[in-house]
Amino acid sequence: MEAVLGSWRIRRADRRIAFWLLALAFPFLVLPAFLLVAPFRADDTFGACCALLSTGRWNAVRMGGVGMGRLVVGLLALGGILLFLRDAVPFVTEAVQERREKAGGAIPPPATVASLVETLAARIGARAPALMVLPSDEPVLFARGALRPTLVFSTGALTRLPDAEMRAALVHELAHVRFRDPLAGWLLMAARLVMFWNPAVQLVCRALVQEMEQRADRLAVSLAGVSDFAAVLRTLNGRHPRQPLAEGRIRASIDAFRARLHRAHLGARLDALTVPEAPLPFARTRFALVALTLTAVLFFVV
Amino acid sequence: MTDTRDTLGIVVWRLALVAIAAVVVLGVLNALPQFLGGEPLGVVRYDSVEQLQNRLHLVAWRPADLPAPWSWPPSGVRLAVGRPNWLQFLFESADPVGDLVICQTTEPARGQAAALLPRWLLRFEGLSATDQEVPETLLSPGRVLLETEISIGDGTARLRRLLRHDGSIVNEVWWQQAARRVMLRLDAPADRLARVADRILRTRP
Image 1 (cartoon, rainbow over the protein chains, first blue to last red):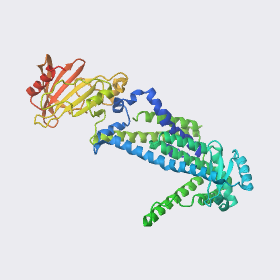
Image 2 (cartoon, rainbow over the protein chains, first blue to last red; image 1 turned 90 degrees about the vertical axis):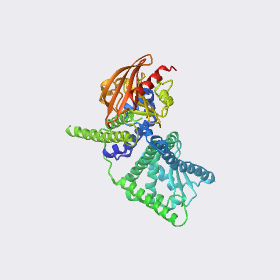
Image 3 (spheres, rainbow over the protein chains, first blue to last red; image 1 turned 180 degrees about the horizontal axis):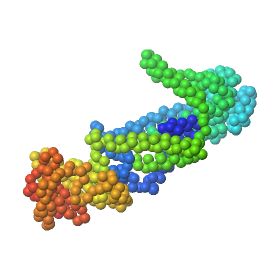
Image 4 (cartoon, one colour; image 1 turned 30 degrees about the vertical axis):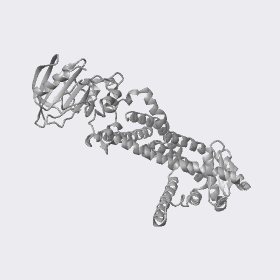
């Protein structure tokens, strides 16, 4: 899918999301439909005479007494599980932590911020969300709540972000509210849980989350400008992620590597915003063509 | 109008390129096992006769008795897909007499891909088996030096002597077993092979 999107130079996040959702439909809908419509695909003779790729053929190649097909499928499943855990564990721990912090006592939001949120929400066509301020020096600002959207701020974010940057940050989060991204995030996590062993599902869901971020980034930039939004990203995401893993020189190397990765990720995210979004002619035709091509190719992979 | 057509052409062309690249990669991945000790295209290897029977929903003909030094179960079980399918059982022996190979035909069950595909497509894919020759993907072929009718069991069979590409000579015995064709191959003198076939056929399960 990435190759198709790249070859067509599709930059618009909403279009890309539609294509990624199409890709996600395959393991959940199309492949089970193949089982019903074409049960002969499960037959060994189909794999031997008709398939473009029969993974079972690799089982005849042995490595340490184990068929390579099973080995590779096992390794891919392990990769899928690790990808799932990598995102599911922080997702759950953050949800639990928020609940605790909320129970610990949220501070009422400043009236200026509340009114700014209402104004910006009306401007981008989002429903004004509930607001929650957490007593923390860490600069935190995000949208949560699958059914009842809430913007969560930390006191650190309120003090560190100047007005222009706060405005850019708020538009970004309100864009998530407008597009119901918190709900989509939960649904994607549910899909990942159902297919926790499937690395393709894990990667497609991750790609979808990135596209949703980019969609919100674009909206923020359109209202607040690139420089203010870039400053927000640096303030909110510029710190080193997570705790150190090890002590001494190893720790320093790991931290330096993480910081480099983090900077590269931020750079790529900002670079993507400078590429103009061109209109996409024949959007429906393209969508249908990709669906047909994927169906045709995947039919012959067993 | 021309612009629209050009744009659509580019869209289709780029998608076609990506699809062709994907098909090539998948095809290479599918073909690679045969160069790494796996099976050629169109051939499936099974761990046991039971596994083959369960997966293909068929009952393979099996010899009720095998003379020493060979014994049941076979050490190799393979299937060459086609119409008919060919099954191969390999009985290895440390004895100088060598390995015994039994091949037999089975018609693909209804609903199986090989039964659904038209014959011309099977021919196109190189899977157009006949019940007169074991596919080359299953057994190395040879030039027939001699073919004669012999009596084994309660009936007759055809004995063939073949010269293989490596210069060695092997003997085969072919006979009809109900609806299937059966073939025994042994790298041994014809009379030895005939005795083995006779023993297999005289002993009833």
